Length: 509
Ligand SMILES: NC(=O)C1=CN([C@@H]2O[C@H](COP(=O)(O)OP(=O)(O)OC[C@H]3O[C@@H](n4cnc5c(N)ncnc54)[C@H](O)[C@@H]3O)[C@@H](O)[C@H]2O)[C@@H](O)CC1
Ligand SMILES: Nc1ncnc2c1ncn2[C@@H]1O[C@H](COP(=O)(O)OP(=O)(O)O)[C@@H](O)[C@H]1O
Ligand SMILES: [K+]
Image 1: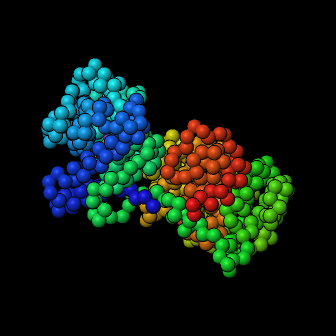
Image 2: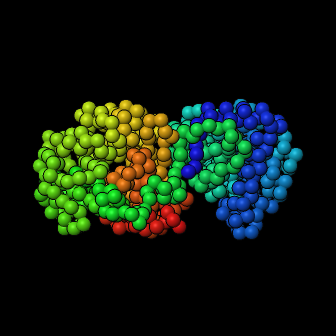
Image 3: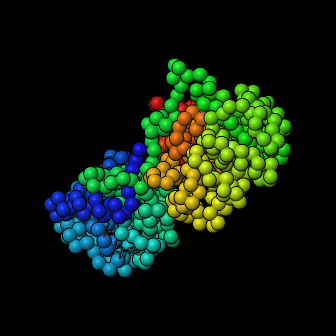
Protein backbone atom coordinates (compact mmCIF):
# COMPACT_ATOMS: atom_id res chain seq x y z
CA UNK A 1 0.00 0.00 0.00
CA UNK A 2 1.23 3.52 -0.71
CA UNK A 3 0.01 6.19 1.69
CA UNK A 4 -0.89 9.78 0.86
CA UNK A 5 -1.51 12.60 3.34
CA UNK A 6 -3.18 15.94 2.89
CA UNK A 7 -1.26 19.20 3.26
CA UNK A 8 -2.45 19.96 6.81
CA UNK A 9 -1.05 16.66 8.04
CA UNK A 10 2.23 17.17 6.15
CA UNK A 11 2.63 20.63 7.68
CA UNK A 12 1.88 19.35 11.20
CA UNK A 13 4.37 16.50 10.81
CA UNK A 14 6.95 18.92 9.44
CA UNK A 15 6.54 21.16 12.51
CA UNK A 16 6.90 18.22 14.89
CA UNK A 17 10.00 16.91 13.13
CA UNK A 18 11.59 20.35 12.72
CA UNK A 19 11.34 20.91 16.46
CA UNK A 20 13.68 17.93 16.89
CA UNK A 21 16.02 18.55 13.93
CA UNK A 22 18.85 20.98 13.24
CA UNK A 23 17.78 24.03 11.27
CA UNK A 24 17.48 23.42 7.54
CA UNK A 25 17.93 19.64 7.91
CA UNK A 26 14.62 18.75 6.23
CA UNK A 27 15.24 20.93 3.22
CA UNK A 28 18.76 19.51 2.87
CA UNK A 29 17.37 15.97 2.92
CA UNK A 30 14.71 16.87 0.36
CA UNK A 31 17.24 18.60 -1.91
CA UNK A 32 19.71 15.72 -1.66
CA UNK A 33 16.99 13.25 -2.67
CA UNK A 34 15.90 15.42 -5.55
CA UNK A 35 19.48 15.93 -6.80
CA UNK A 36 20.14 12.20 -6.57
CA UNK A 37 17.11 11.35 -8.76
CA UNK A 38 18.14 14.04 -11.29
CA UNK A 39 21.71 12.72 -11.37
CA UNK A 40 20.36 9.23 -12.02
CA UNK A 41 18.26 10.51 -14.92
CA UNK A 42 21.21 12.38 -16.41
CA UNK A 43 23.43 9.31 -16.03
CA UNK A 44 20.93 6.89 -17.56
CA UNK A 45 20.57 9.09 -20.62
CA UNK A 46 16.84 9.49 -20.20
CA UNK A 47 17.22 13.23 -19.70
CA UNK A 48 16.85 15.45 -22.78
CA UNK A 49 19.50 15.13 -25.46
CA UNK A 50 22.23 13.82 -23.18
CA UNK A 51 23.32 10.38 -24.34
CA UNK A 52 23.94 7.37 -22.08
CA UNK A 53 26.94 7.78 -19.85
CA UNK A 54 27.33 11.53 -20.30
CA UNK A 55 26.06 12.07 -16.80
CA UNK A 56 25.84 15.15 -14.66
CA UNK A 57 29.14 16.75 -15.72
CA UNK A 58 28.53 19.22 -18.55
CA UNK A 59 24.74 18.74 -18.56
CA UNK A 60 22.47 21.78 -18.77
CA UNK A 61 20.00 22.02 -15.92
CA UNK A 62 17.35 24.72 -15.51
CA UNK A 63 15.64 25.38 -12.19
CA UNK A 64 12.25 27.05 -12.24
CA UNK A 65 12.28 28.56 -8.77
CA UNK A 66 9.17 30.06 -7.15
CA UNK A 67 9.17 32.25 -4.08
CA UNK A 68 8.56 29.60 -1.40
CA UNK A 69 10.35 26.59 0.04
CA UNK A 70 9.58 24.56 -3.08
CA UNK A 71 11.87 26.99 -4.90
CA UNK A 72 14.35 26.57 -2.04
CA UNK A 73 14.45 22.79 -2.54
CA UNK A 74 15.08 23.26 -6.25
CA UNK A 75 17.89 25.80 -5.65
CA UNK A 76 19.69 23.58 -3.12
CA UNK A 77 19.33 20.57 -5.44
CA UNK A 78 20.68 22.73 -8.29
CA UNK A 79 23.66 23.67 -6.12
CA UNK A 80 24.45 19.97 -5.57
CA UNK A 81 24.29 19.29 -9.33
CA UNK A 82 26.43 22.37 -10.06
CA UNK A 83 29.10 21.06 -7.68
CA UNK A 84 29.18 17.90 -9.80
CA UNK A 85 29.83 19.91 -12.95
CA UNK A 86 26.36 20.63 -14.32
CA UNK A 87 25.70 24.04 -15.91
CA UNK A 88 22.83 25.20 -13.75
CA UNK A 89 20.61 28.22 -14.47
CA UNK A 90 17.84 29.26 -12.09
CA UNK A 91 14.89 31.15 -13.54
CA UNK A 92 13.52 33.13 -10.60
CA UNK A 93 9.74 33.60 -10.54
CA UNK A 94 7.54 35.30 -7.96
CA UNK A 95 7.87 38.17 -5.53
CA UNK A 96 10.92 36.86 -3.65
CA UNK A 97 13.54 34.12 -3.75
CA UNK A 98 14.71 31.61 -1.15
CA UNK A 99 17.89 33.41 -0.09
CA UNK A 100 19.80 30.47 1.35
CA UNK A 101 19.09 28.37 -1.72
CA UNK A 102 20.15 31.10 -4.13
CA UNK A 103 23.35 31.76 -2.18
CA UNK A 104 24.16 28.02 -2.23
CA UNK A 105 23.59 27.86 -5.98
CA UNK A 106 25.77 30.90 -6.67
CA UNK A 107 28.61 29.68 -4.51
CA UNK A 108 28.49 26.34 -6.38
CA UNK A 109 28.94 28.19 -9.69
CA UNK A 110 25.28 28.31 -10.80
CA UNK A 111 23.75 31.43 -12.32
CA UNK A 112 20.32 32.97 -12.12
CA UNK A 113 18.10 35.15 -14.22
CA UNK A 114 14.79 36.78 -13.63
CA UNK A 115 11.61 35.41 -15.17
CA UNK A 116 10.94 39.00 -16.25
CA UNK A 117 13.68 38.38 -18.84
CA UNK A 118 11.54 36.29 -21.22
CA UNK A 119 14.16 35.91 -23.94
CA UNK A 120 16.76 34.66 -21.44
CA UNK A 121 14.28 32.29 -19.78
CA UNK A 122 13.10 30.81 -23.07
CA UNK A 123 16.66 30.37 -24.35
CA UNK A 124 17.71 28.60 -21.13
CA UNK A 125 14.65 26.33 -21.15
CA UNK A 126 15.08 25.44 -24.83
CA UNK A 127 18.73 24.47 -24.29
CA UNK A 128 18.10 22.43 -21.14
CA UNK A 129 18.65 18.69 -20.76
CA UNK A 130 16.76 18.62 -17.50
CA UNK A 131 14.35 21.07 -15.89
CA UNK A 132 13.52 21.04 -12.19
CA UNK A 133 10.07 22.47 -11.54
CA UNK A 134 10.32 24.26 -8.19
CA UNK A 135 7.64 26.85 -8.88
CA UNK A 136 5.06 25.65 -6.36
CA UNK A 137 4.70 22.76 -3.96
CA UNK A 138 2.18 22.16 -1.22
CA UNK A 139 1.78 25.94 -0.77
CA UNK A 140 0.19 26.35 -4.23
CA UNK A 141 -3.35 27.68 -4.29
CA UNK A 142 -5.62 27.80 -7.35
CA UNK A 143 -4.47 28.10 -10.97
CA UNK A 144 -0.91 29.20 -11.72
CA UNK A 145 -0.47 32.98 -11.86
CA UNK A 146 2.06 34.76 -14.06
CA UNK A 147 4.91 34.35 -14.73
CA UNK A 148 4.50 30.77 -13.47
CA UNK A 149 1.86 29.81 -16.05
CA UNK A 150 4.02 30.98 -18.98
CA UNK A 151 7.10 29.20 -17.60
CA UNK A 152 5.09 25.98 -17.16
CA UNK A 153 4.02 26.29 -20.81
CA UNK A 154 7.61 26.76 -22.04
CA UNK A 155 8.78 23.81 -19.95
CA UNK A 156 6.03 21.55 -21.28
CA UNK A 157 7.05 22.36 -24.89
CA UNK A 158 10.75 21.67 -24.30
CA UNK A 159 12.44 18.35 -25.09
CA UNK A 160 14.13 18.32 -21.68
CA UNK A 161 13.23 15.80 -19.00
CA UNK A 162 11.04 17.56 -16.47
CA UNK A 163 11.38 16.67 -12.81
CA UNK A 164 8.76 18.13 -10.50
CA UNK A 165 9.89 19.03 -6.99
CA UNK A 166 7.34 17.62 -4.49
CA UNK A 167 4.48 17.91 -7.01
CA UNK A 168 3.93 19.35 -10.46
CA UNK A 169 3.22 23.07 -10.11
CA UNK A 170 -0.42 23.81 -10.83
CA UNK A 171 -1.67 20.48 -9.41
CA UNK A 172 -3.62 20.77 -6.16
CA UNK A 173 -1.83 18.60 -3.60
CA UNK A 174 -4.96 17.43 -1.77
CA UNK A 175 -7.27 16.75 -4.69
CA UNK A 176 -5.36 16.46 -7.98
CA UNK A 177 -7.47 19.29 -9.36
CA UNK A 178 -5.78 21.32 -12.12
CA UNK A 179 -7.22 24.76 -12.84
CA UNK A 180 -5.56 26.19 -15.93
CA UNK A 181 -1.86 25.78 -16.75
CA UNK A 182 0.18 23.14 -14.93
CA UNK A 183 3.58 21.52 -15.33
CA UNK A 184 3.57 18.08 -16.98
CA UNK A 185 6.44 16.17 -15.39
CA UNK A 186 8.26 13.04 -16.51
CA UNK A 187 9.22 12.30 -12.92
CA UNK A 188 7.95 13.75 -9.64
CA UNK A 189 10.18 13.56 -6.57
CA UNK A 190 7.89 13.94 -3.58
CA UNK A 191 9.00 14.40 0.02
CA UNK A 192 8.00 12.71 3.27
CA UNK A 193 4.77 11.12 2.01
CA UNK A 194 2.78 10.89 -1.21
CA UNK A 195 0.23 13.65 -1.78
CA UNK A 196 -3.33 12.60 -2.80
CA UNK A 197 -3.15 14.80 -5.91
CA UNK A 198 -0.31 12.63 -7.26
CA UNK A 199 -2.59 9.56 -7.34
CA UNK A 200 -5.76 11.05 -8.81
CA UNK A 201 -6.41 12.48 -12.27
CA UNK A 202 -6.02 15.05 -13.62
CA UNK A 203 -3.07 15.54 -11.20
CA UNK A 204 -1.79 11.96 -11.60
CA UNK A 205 -1.59 12.47 -15.35
CA UNK A 206 0.77 15.42 -14.76
CA UNK A 207 3.05 13.65 -12.29
CA UNK A 208 4.71 10.97 -14.47
CA UNK A 209 6.69 8.43 -12.44
CA UNK A 210 6.52 9.35 -8.76
CA UNK A 211 9.54 8.78 -6.47
CA UNK A 212 9.21 9.18 -2.70
CA UNK A 213 12.14 10.62 -0.73
CA UNK A 214 12.04 9.81 2.97
CA UNK A 215 12.81 12.90 5.04
CA UNK A 216 11.79 11.39 8.38
CA UNK A 217 8.16 12.58 8.59
CA UNK A 218 6.81 9.02 8.98
CA UNK A 219 6.29 8.86 12.77
CA UNK A 220 4.46 12.21 12.81
CA UNK A 221 2.05 11.81 9.89
CA UNK A 222 -0.95 9.97 11.36
CA UNK A 223 -3.57 8.14 9.31
CA UNK A 224 -3.45 8.49 5.52
CA UNK A 225 -6.24 10.26 3.65
CA UNK A 226 -5.78 8.29 0.44
CA UNK A 227 -4.08 4.96 -0.27
CA UNK A 228 -2.86 3.24 -3.41
CA UNK A 229 -3.13 -0.57 -3.13
CA UNK A 230 -0.33 -2.75 -4.50
CA UNK A 231 -0.30 -6.35 -5.74
CA UNK A 232 0.38 -7.78 -2.26
CA UNK A 233 -2.72 -6.04 -0.85
CA UNK A 234 -4.92 -7.36 -3.64
CA UNK A 235 -3.54 -10.86 -3.11
CA UNK A 236 -4.84 -10.68 0.48
CA UNK A 237 -8.25 -9.32 -0.51
CA UNK A 238 -8.86 -11.84 -3.29
CA UNK A 239 -7.60 -15.11 -1.81
CA UNK A 240 -7.56 -18.30 -3.81
CA UNK A 241 -9.42 -21.47 -2.74
CA UNK A 242 -8.14 -23.62 0.10
CA UNK A 243 -8.01 -27.44 0.26
CA UNK A 244 -11.35 -27.42 2.08
CA UNK A 245 -13.06 -25.31 -0.60
CA UNK A 246 -16.04 -26.50 -2.54
CA UNK A 247 -18.10 -24.57 -5.05
CA UNK A 248 -20.54 -23.26 -2.44
CA UNK A 249 -17.85 -22.18 0.01
CA UNK A 250 -15.98 -20.33 -2.74
CA UNK A 251 -19.02 -18.11 -3.15
CA UNK A 252 -22.18 -18.02 -5.22
CA UNK A 253 -22.99 -14.59 -6.65
CA UNK A 254 -26.41 -14.03 -8.15
CA UNK A 255 -26.35 -11.78 -11.23
CA UNK A 256 -29.57 -9.92 -12.07
CA UNK A 257 -28.80 -8.30 -15.40
CA UNK A 258 -30.01 -7.99 -18.99
CA UNK A 259 -33.54 -7.59 -20.26
CA UNK A 260 -35.55 -8.18 -23.44
CA UNK A 261 -33.75 -5.22 -25.04
CA UNK A 262 -30.23 -5.34 -23.56
CA UNK A 263 -28.46 -8.68 -23.51
CA UNK A 264 -24.70 -8.11 -23.90
CA UNK A 265 -24.24 -6.55 -20.47
CA UNK A 266 -25.49 -9.74 -18.83
CA UNK A 267 -23.01 -11.91 -20.77
CA UNK A 268 -20.14 -9.62 -19.71
CA UNK A 269 -21.15 -9.44 -16.05
CA UNK A 270 -21.56 -13.22 -15.75
CA UNK A 271 -18.18 -13.66 -17.48
CA UNK A 272 -16.52 -11.33 -14.96
CA UNK A 273 -18.02 -13.32 -12.07
CA UNK A 274 -16.95 -16.70 -13.48
CA UNK A 275 -13.39 -15.62 -14.22
CA UNK A 276 -13.30 -13.82 -10.87
CA UNK A 277 -13.29 -17.19 -9.13
CA UNK A 278 -16.90 -17.67 -8.04
CA UNK A 279 -17.70 -21.27 -7.14
CA UNK A 280 -20.96 -21.04 -9.06
CA UNK A 281 -22.72 -18.12 -10.73
CA UNK A 282 -26.50 -17.93 -10.69
CA UNK A 283 -28.04 -15.75 -13.37
CA UNK A 284 -31.60 -14.44 -13.47
CA UNK A 285 -33.17 -12.48 -16.30
CA UNK A 286 -35.65 -12.33 -19.18
CA UNK A 287 -35.77 -15.31 -21.53
CA UNK A 288 -33.64 -13.94 -24.37
CA UNK A 289 -30.83 -12.82 -22.04
CA UNK A 290 -30.88 -16.21 -20.34
CA UNK A 291 -30.54 -17.95 -23.70
CA UNK A 292 -27.52 -15.86 -24.62
CA UNK A 293 -25.82 -16.32 -21.27
CA UNK A 294 -26.41 -20.10 -21.39
CA UNK A 295 -24.96 -20.20 -24.86
CA UNK A 296 -21.79 -18.31 -23.91
CA UNK A 297 -21.44 -19.45 -20.31
CA UNK A 298 -22.90 -22.96 -19.92
CA UNK A 299 -21.17 -22.94 -16.48
CA UNK A 300 -23.77 -20.48 -15.16
CA UNK A 301 -26.96 -21.72 -13.48
CA UNK A 302 -29.73 -19.69 -15.06
CA UNK A 303 -33.36 -18.85 -14.25
CA UNK A 304 -35.92 -17.02 -16.38
CA UNK A 305 -37.58 -14.48 -14.09
CA UNK A 306 -40.16 -11.75 -14.45
CA UNK A 307 -40.56 -9.58 -11.34
CA UNK A 308 -39.52 -12.01 -8.61
CA UNK A 309 -36.31 -13.87 -7.76
CA UNK A 310 -37.91 -16.44 -5.46
CA UNK A 311 -37.01 -19.35 -7.80
CA UNK A 312 -33.34 -18.45 -8.20
CA UNK A 313 -31.84 -20.53 -5.39
CA UNK A 314 -29.32 -19.62 -2.69
CA UNK A 315 -26.70 -16.98 -3.35
CA UNK A 316 -24.40 -15.11 -0.97
CA UNK A 317 -24.12 -11.79 -2.81
CA UNK A 318 -26.02 -10.04 -5.58
CA UNK A 319 -24.90 -8.05 -8.63
CA UNK A 320 -27.80 -6.08 -10.04
CA UNK A 321 -28.26 -3.62 -12.82
CA UNK A 322 -26.23 -4.10 -16.03
CA UNK A 323 -28.66 -3.94 -18.97
CA UNK A 324 -31.58 -4.42 -16.59
CA UNK A 325 -33.66 -1.51 -17.88
CA UNK A 326 -35.02 1.22 -15.66
CA UNK A 327 -38.77 0.53 -15.59
CA UNK A 328 -41.07 -1.02 -13.00
CA UNK A 329 -39.81 -4.52 -13.70
CA UNK A 330 -36.21 -3.50 -12.96
CA UNK A 331 -37.30 -1.55 -9.89
CA UNK A 332 -39.09 -4.59 -8.46
CA UNK A 333 -36.03 -6.82 -8.92
CA UNK A 334 -33.72 -4.23 -7.37
CA UNK A 335 -36.05 -3.73 -4.42
CA UNK A 336 -35.99 -7.48 -3.87
CA UNK A 337 -32.18 -7.84 -3.81
CA UNK A 338 -31.69 -4.69 -1.74
CA UNK A 339 -34.32 -6.00 0.65
CA UNK A 340 -32.12 -9.00 1.52
CA UNK A 341 -29.41 -9.02 4.18
CA UNK A 342 -26.76 -9.99 1.59
CA UNK A 343 -24.03 -7.78 0.08
CA UNK A 344 -25.34 -6.15 -3.11
CA UNK A 345 -23.49 -4.43 -5.95
CA UNK A 346 -25.60 -2.01 -7.97
CA UNK A 347 -24.34 -0.93 -11.40
CA UNK A 348 -25.50 0.74 -14.62
CA UNK A 349 -29.33 0.79 -15.02
CA UNK A 350 -29.62 -0.18 -11.36
CA UNK A 351 -27.97 3.14 -10.49
CA UNK A 352 -30.55 5.04 -12.53
CA UNK A 353 -33.27 3.32 -10.53
CA UNK A 354 -31.69 4.04 -7.13
CA UNK A 355 -31.14 7.69 -8.16
CA UNK A 356 -34.95 8.04 -8.04
CA UNK A 357 -35.49 5.47 -5.26
CA UNK A 358 -32.75 6.36 -2.76
CA UNK A 359 -34.83 4.72 -0.05
CA UNK A 360 -33.84 1.33 -1.54
CA UNK A 361 -30.31 2.00 -0.23
CA UNK A 362 -31.42 2.29 3.41
CA UNK A 363 -30.22 -1.12 4.53
CA UNK A 364 -27.76 -2.65 6.99
CA UNK A 365 -25.94 -5.11 4.73
CA UNK A 366 -23.04 -3.86 2.57
CA UNK A 367 -23.90 -2.06 -0.69
CA UNK A 368 -21.37 -1.32 -3.42
CA UNK A 369 -22.26 1.24 -6.10
CA UNK A 370 -20.10 1.36 -9.25
CA UNK A 371 -21.01 4.52 -11.18
CA UNK A 372 -19.11 6.28 -13.97
CA UNK A 373 -19.01 10.07 -13.77
CA UNK A 374 -22.37 10.51 -15.52
CA UNK A 375 -24.11 8.04 -13.22
CA UNK A 376 -22.55 9.58 -10.12
CA UNK A 377 -23.59 13.06 -11.30
CA UNK A 378 -27.18 11.83 -11.56
CA UNK A 379 -27.01 10.29 -8.07
CA UNK A 380 -25.69 13.55 -6.60
CA UNK A 381 -27.65 16.03 -8.72
CA UNK A 382 -24.60 17.58 -10.39
CA UNK A 383 -22.81 17.49 -13.78
CA UNK A 384 -20.42 14.79 -15.06
CA UNK A 385 -17.64 17.29 -15.86
CA UNK A 386 -17.72 18.50 -12.24
CA UNK A 387 -17.34 14.90 -11.05
CA UNK A 388 -14.44 14.26 -13.44
CA UNK A 389 -12.61 17.44 -12.41
CA UNK A 390 -12.99 16.72 -8.66
CA UNK A 391 -13.16 12.96 -8.30
CA UNK A 392 -12.11 12.64 -4.64
CA UNK A 393 -14.61 15.22 -3.42
CA UNK A 394 -17.51 13.63 -5.27
CA UNK A 395 -16.77 10.01 -4.38
CA UNK A 396 -16.47 10.93 -0.68
CA UNK A 397 -19.70 12.89 -0.82
CA UNK A 398 -21.50 9.99 -2.48
CA UNK A 399 -20.31 7.48 0.14
CA UNK A 400 -21.51 9.82 2.88
CA UNK A 401 -24.89 10.72 1.36
CA UNK A 402 -25.79 7.28 0.05
CA UNK A 403 -24.42 5.22 2.94
CA UNK A 404 -22.67 2.84 0.53
CA UNK A 405 -19.21 1.88 -0.68
CA UNK A 406 -18.86 3.91 -3.86
CA UNK A 407 -16.47 3.05 -6.70
CA UNK A 408 -16.22 5.88 -9.22
CA UNK A 409 -14.96 4.57 -12.58
CA UNK A 410 -12.97 6.47 -15.18
CA UNK A 411 -9.47 7.79 -15.80
CA UNK A 412 -8.61 7.12 -12.15
CA UNK A 413 -10.93 4.74 -10.36
CA UNK A 414 -11.47 5.88 -6.75
CA UNK A 415 -13.28 3.99 -4.00
CA UNK A 416 -14.77 5.60 -0.89
CA UNK A 417 -16.37 4.29 2.26
CA UNK A 418 -17.18 6.45 5.29
CA UNK A 419 -14.43 6.43 7.92
CA UNK A 420 -11.71 5.00 5.68
CA UNK A 421 -9.04 6.47 3.43
CA UNK A 422 -10.10 6.62 -0.20
CA UNK A 423 -8.53 3.81 -2.23
CA UNK A 424 -7.18 4.81 -5.63
CA UNK A 425 -6.69 2.13 -8.24
CA UNK A 426 -3.20 2.15 -9.78
CA UNK A 427 -3.93 -0.13 -12.76
CA UNK A 428 -6.07 0.42 -15.86
CA UNK A 429 -5.76 1.95 -19.28
CA UNK A 430 -7.99 4.24 -21.34
CA UNK A 431 -8.41 1.21 -23.64
CA UNK A 432 -10.89 -0.04 -21.03
CA UNK A 433 -13.28 2.73 -22.07
CA UNK A 434 -15.21 0.33 -24.30
CA UNK A 435 -18.82 -0.80 -24.08
CA UNK A 436 -19.32 -3.66 -21.68
CA UNK A 437 -16.05 -3.37 -19.77
CA UNK A 438 -17.80 -1.87 -16.75
CA UNK A 439 -20.15 -4.87 -16.76
CA UNK A 440 -17.14 -7.19 -16.48
CA UNK A 441 -16.04 -5.21 -13.42
CA UNK A 442 -19.43 -5.64 -11.76
CA UNK A 443 -19.24 -9.43 -12.06
CA UNK A 444 -15.64 -9.53 -10.87
CA UNK A 445 -16.44 -7.55 -7.72
CA UNK A 446 -19.56 -9.70 -7.22
CA UNK A 447 -17.35 -12.82 -7.17
CA UNK A 448 -15.23 -11.34 -4.36
CA UNK A 449 -18.28 -10.20 -2.39
CA UNK A 450 -19.73 -13.69 -2.60
CA UNK A 451 -16.38 -15.11 -1.49
CA UNK A 452 -16.62 -13.14 1.75
CA UNK A 453 -14.47 -10.06 1.03
CA UNK A 454 -15.63 -6.82 2.66
CA UNK A 455 -17.26 -4.27 0.37
CA UNK A 456 -14.20 -2.03 0.06
CA UNK A 457 -11.74 -4.92 -0.34
CA UNK A 458 -13.91 -6.54 -3.00
CA UNK A 459 -14.24 -3.24 -4.87
CA UNK A 460 -10.52 -2.45 -4.68
CA UNK A 461 -9.45 -5.97 -5.69
CA UNK A 462 -11.93 -5.94 -8.57
CA UNK A 463 -10.76 -2.57 -9.88
CA UNK A 464 -7.11 -3.62 -9.63
CA UNK A 465 -7.49 -6.93 -11.47
CA UNK A 466 -9.86 -5.44 -14.05
CA UNK A 467 -7.32 -2.69 -14.79
CA UNK A 468 -4.48 -5.17 -15.02
CA UNK A 469 -6.54 -7.48 -17.27
CA UNK A 470 -7.21 -4.47 -19.51
CA UNK A 471 -3.47 -3.74 -19.76
CA UNK A 472 -2.63 -7.37 -20.44
CA UNK A 473 -5.36 -7.67 -23.08
CA UNK A 474 -4.04 -4.56 -24.78
CA UNK A 475 -0.49 -6.02 -24.52
CA UNK A 476 0.61 -3.13 -22.41
CA UNK A 477 2.86 -3.44 -19.38
CA UNK A 478 1.38 -5.87 -16.91
CA UNK A 479 2.16 -4.12 -13.67
CA UNK A 480 0.83 -1.34 -11.51
CA UNK A 481 4.12 0.57 -11.74
CA UNK A 482 4.26 1.70 -15.34
CA UNK A 483 1.60 3.80 -17.02
CA UNK A 484 0.05 2.35 -20.18
CA UNK A 485 2.03 3.19 -23.26
CA UNK A 486 1.47 3.50 -26.99
CA UNK A 487 2.24 -0.16 -27.71
CA UNK A 488 -1.29 -0.98 -26.63
CA UNK A 489 -3.94 -2.05 -29.13
CA UNK A 490 -7.73 -1.71 -28.99
CA UNK A 491 -9.55 -4.32 -26.90
CA UNK A 492 -13.11 -5.47 -26.37
CA UNK A 493 -14.80 -6.13 -23.05
CA UNK A 494 -14.62 -9.81 -23.87
CA UNK A 495 -10.82 -9.61 -24.19
CA UNK A 496 -10.76 -8.21 -20.65
CA UNK A 497 -12.67 -11.25 -19.35
CA UNK A 498 -10.21 -13.57 -21.10
CA UNK A 499 -7.22 -11.79 -19.53
CA UNK A 500 -8.51 -12.00 -15.92
CA UNK A 501 -6.73 -15.33 -15.11
CA UNK A 502 -3.40 -13.88 -16.30
CA UNK A 503 -4.02 -10.79 -14.18
CA UNK A 504 -4.49 -13.03 -11.10
CA UNK A 505 -1.19 -14.78 -11.86
CA UNK A 506 0.74 -11.49 -11.72
CA UNK A 507 -0.29 -11.04 -8.07
CA UNK A 508 2.02 -13.76 -6.91
CA UNK A 509 4.77 -12.88 -9.40
N1 LIG B 1 6.41 20.42 4.51
C1 LIG B 1 7.54 19.74 4.57
O1 LIG B 1 7.63 18.80 5.32
C2 LIG B 1 8.69 20.14 3.75
C3 LIG B 1 8.51 21.01 2.70
N2 LIG B 1 9.47 21.25 1.83
C4 LIG B 1 9.18 22.05 0.63
O2 LIG B 1 8.41 23.19 0.91
C5 LIG B 1 7.33 23.24 0.00
C6 LIG B 1 6.27 24.11 0.55
O3 LIG B 1 6.80 25.40 0.66
P1 LIG B 1 5.94 26.71 0.91
O4 LIG B 1 5.04 26.48 2.05
O5 LIG B 1 6.89 27.82 1.01
O6 LIG B 1 5.01 26.82 -0.35
P2 LIG B 1 5.36 26.76 -1.92
O7 LIG B 1 6.80 26.94 -2.16
O8 LIG B 1 4.70 25.57 -2.46
O9 LIG B 1 4.56 28.03 -2.50
C7 LIG B 1 4.31 29.18 -1.77
C8 LIG B 1 4.51 30.42 -2.60
O10 LIG B 1 3.83 30.34 -3.84
C9 LIG B 1 2.94 31.45 -4.02
N3 LIG B 1 1.74 30.91 -4.71
C10 LIG B 1 0.75 30.14 -4.18
N4 LIG B 1 -0.15 29.81 -5.12
C11 LIG B 1 0.27 30.37 -6.27
C12 LIG B 1 -0.23 30.36 -7.61
N5 LIG B 1 -1.36 29.73 -7.92
N6 LIG B 1 0.46 31.01 -8.58
C13 LIG B 1 1.61 31.65 -8.26
N7 LIG B 1 2.14 31.70 -7.01
C14 LIG B 1 1.49 31.07 -6.03
C15 LIG B 1 2.66 31.95 -2.65
O11 LIG B 1 2.35 33.31 -2.70
C16 LIG B 1 3.97 31.67 -1.91
O12 LIG B 1 4.89 32.70 -2.11
C17 LIG B 1 7.01 21.80 -0.24
O13 LIG B 1 6.22 21.58 -1.39
C18 LIG B 1 8.38 21.21 -0.36
O14 LIG B 1 8.90 21.37 -1.67
C19 LIG B 1 10.78 20.63 1.90
O15 LIG B 1 11.77 21.62 1.91
C20 LIG B 1 11.02 19.69 3.03
C21 LIG B 1 10.03 19.58 4.07
N1 LIG C 1 -9.97 7.24 -19.48
C1 LIG C 1 -10.00 6.07 -18.86
N2 LIG C 1 -8.88 5.53 -18.35
C2 LIG C 1 -8.89 4.33 -17.72
N3 LIG C 1 -10.01 3.59 -17.57
C3 LIG C 1 -11.16 4.07 -18.05
C4 LIG C 1 -11.22 5.33 -18.72
N4 LIG C 1 -12.51 5.54 -19.08
C5 LIG C 1 -13.21 4.46 -18.67
N5 LIG C 1 -12.40 3.57 -18.04
C6 LIG C 1 -12.80 2.29 -17.45
O1 LIG C 1 -13.57 1.55 -18.40
C7 LIG C 1 -14.66 0.91 -17.76
C8 LIG C 1 -15.94 1.42 -18.43
O2 LIG C 1 -17.05 1.17 -17.67
P1 LIG C 1 -18.49 1.79 -17.99
O3 LIG C 1 -18.37 3.26 -18.19
O4 LIG C 1 -19.41 1.30 -16.95
O5 LIG C 1 -18.84 1.16 -19.39
P2 LIG C 1 -19.96 0.08 -19.76
O6 LIG C 1 -21.20 0.49 -19.03
O7 LIG C 1 -20.12 0.19 -21.25
O8 LIG C 1 -19.47 -1.23 -19.34
C9 LIG C 1 -14.54 1.23 -16.28
O9 LIG C 1 -13.84 0.21 -15.61
C10 LIG C 1 -13.72 2.50 -16.27
O10 LIG C 1 -12.98 2.70 -15.07
K1 LIG D 1 6.84 21.90 -8.01
